[in-house]
Length: 505
Image: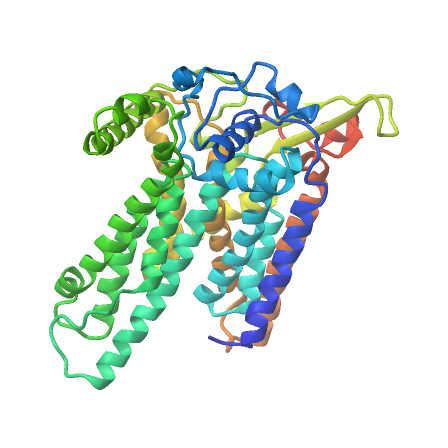
């Protein structure tokens, strides 16, 4: 690893601190329940207080804005299951939102705190991962900086929705696998230098970084089921890396070695561990009598063995109900968009819009939170992804392949739902793709700048191009910032920031 180890940490931490300022400043603005916060903020509060989601009163949002937490429907103890709320996403993301509410109260700041925190940590993780992949602290910091000023990531970090937590765990799982790749290759080199050769090579131990990846990807599935696409894709990717490492060290049967030495560990780390992690996220539902479909009274009336059996049966039946809901979800929405349009930012989601009577020096004011990416970064990312395809075809560089796989795992499955089921979808579903898009930009930047021993003129020109792109990204973000963070501005200024008037307004 080139460069100073101190700056390898200090640089990413400084970039993350910059991202923290952007995400935590005026986090409670707007002082309102935005978009789907109406579901997740209340579900999170119910989990903290009851262990399972609960039906709220019709005017619960108004009561919350009046600083009242008396928002629940009341049921007699014998009919507690009638107050249970039917929800269609696993509970982990809502538990995390609930921690912020427990710490800071049932307020906009409280229910947005956890999202802002994981948003900041994800900047640090991406910077460190990009540094490891490029062996460049500068390029690692560039990755973190671009994520810090990426508009969709900023908005979701400041909103109590689940998708920022999904992105966080996917990125963390990928980062752990990148570290595991380095560690596994290091062990292979040590074995090669100290042991007699064999056809298959050694067993590489328990591989704690791979186990950590399984925990993270299981947690991603425990936030939203779409995490399963990343779990499967990254498991296959990790096995391919293992086979490639055994082939690179000169083993005669690298795939046999991978199957016999690495696959059992992968089944533990990327099979059993994620399953246990997912199931553990439902602990509140198992321990509560008020969960949807829990059948607590029936289960407890016939002894402990039947209680365990019926609890698992009820849990699985709940999952089949949720699967049916997701399969048939085709309700039209004014902000829905098709997955092909996501990289082009054609139809963002207006999380919040009001016309305050005062607060700006104009006859008409606007206050908005628009869930949209920074266009310079997204369109630059498209070009970089095309470059990654060409680079991978030409060189089979593992970094290009990994970035393309991560992007594809977050994007391509939605095409099936769009074609087969006409499912209602939104641009912010693309947030797990964003770190891989930025990694593509950073890898392309490294190619443009050139290696350390390239001609000085080449390095200067390349650095100027990358610097100009970074500056344009910052200017573009600065221009959009008021409509990403609910600043009160004149209506004319709000309207001027709508890039595509038909899709953004």
